Image (tube, rainbow, N blue to C red; front, side, top):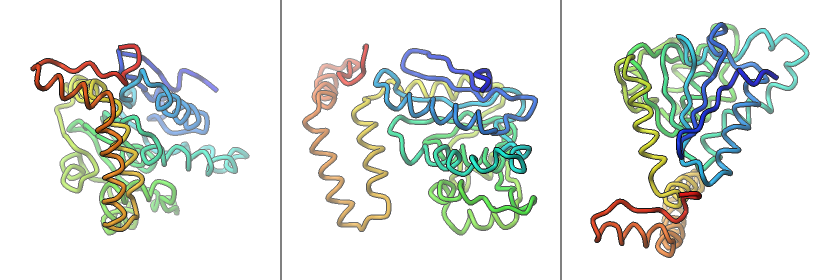
Length: 258
């Protein structure tokens, strides 16, 4: 495995992960998939990390899976690795923020759908293009449905068409469009702001969202009450209330090393 395929850098409570196969438009080979999954899962287990910022090097965010592996002996190992990668957003409680420039196609769109918040440049394009090579986006489909709804996900899967950043924002796949020159600054600003928020509140909130998924309205209400009562008793909530009354920035007890 080449560690250089995924660059990792800490910036306070923010972990920056950069896909680094620019000559392959950051195509997801087996090694990169494993490395990216492990990096996000390790970050999720580290209380000193408040958020993950995911980007791509070069002119593309991610062109999807590396097709050269699909007809090789490595192909048998792809499905379980892709299943772990393309469910990260549903499984982890550390926010993933994606900074997207250029194409984010097929599995690249899957990575975008797994991010909790997405900032994209004006140059970004998105699409579930698998149908063009006789495939369906099976393993990214669930995350895309959660982001944009089933009918739109089916339409993109059937047509294989690409959409621009403005269109992606209109259907809810991404959250913000910015000038290409401003992408890194703006995405870092957003991610750092999230990383500085209460870890207890963020983790409880994302776990609440995951636990409510597929439940009835009344079940969701019961789950909400349980999570809220837990946060009411947390040190972060007590500190947040004190800081509010004292008109100062809070110092979150759950932020390790702070």
